[in-house]
Image 1 (cartoon, one colour):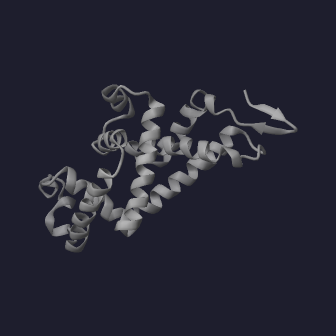
Image 2 (cartoon, rainbow, N blue to C red; image 1 turned 90 degrees about the horizontal axis):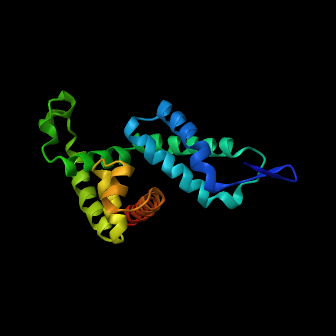
Image 3 (tube, helix red, strand yellow; image 1 turned 90 degrees about the vertical axis):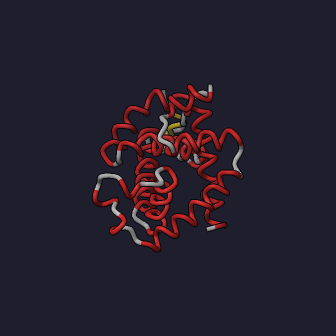
Length: 185
């Protein structure tokens, strides 16, 4: 229960998952592709934890968390539609599926591929690999499994960790990779 002190609401992060997870997932499902929902909601909770000290208490936890979620969704689409975001997506596809152009979908044909983007994707792939090598062992494991499409539950079960540990490792890996990419690519 949110505690009111001097007409201000105090945060209770221990109960966020119980109170707000379903609501945030429902909101995210309306605005994101299904494969991005879990990641964005996880990022929302981690961002909220990191910025909890800045919470002024003038709104409810749910309103505050929803605002953070909306910013994360906007960030996702900004990245997805930027030039670098498109190249990153291509790099992941090329690295995971070397014969991606042979898929039946005509939009994946080589005649639709921009050679410059393909070369940039190969360069990015090399930088991504070297960046992943810089991560801690647990961060590498979680990030590689997430890139391969494993759910959080599958990652937790395979690595014998709980969801919070998986989310923290994934968040740290993403932040380190973002910094590494900014410096090296």
